Length: 177
Image (cartoon, rainbow, N blue to C red; front, side, top):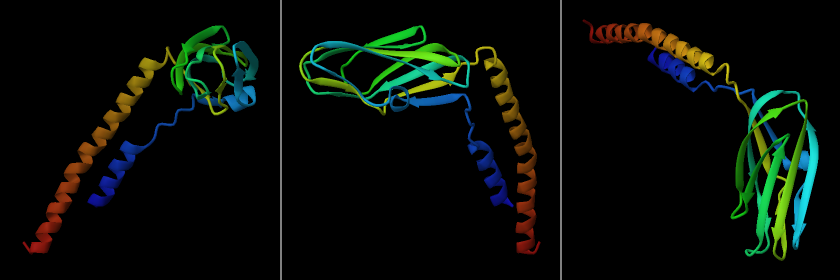
């Protein structure tokens, strides 16, 4: 009996919350592969990507880079629709974050400004993770989570005394009292 109660408690607390408002895109999917630049140069890659979702999203961008010369100066600017973020390359990976409005058709642009010899690449496994921002529903979600937790606590407050009593009765039967 206790084993089953503990199993139920563990399952209730470990039930994963599936976030259906997260989309992960790789640079392989968006740009078709690595983006490389040689010598002193400025390049701008621009493309569109289609989505089935719409709304305001937090875009977390992780750029995995390959730099052939430690003396290279590299500045990277990423635009998604009309929002942009820039970074100076110091080490890989480069992590950027910006808030964007995602439409059915979206424009992404990547500008790399490089001074120095050798090459610099942004690798195809770089990612953009879009997480839906629910500004209007956040308080509602918190109250739903609180009410679910209160329900679980109420059920446990009823089950635990019953389980304790069952254990006491079984121990008395074993002792023959």
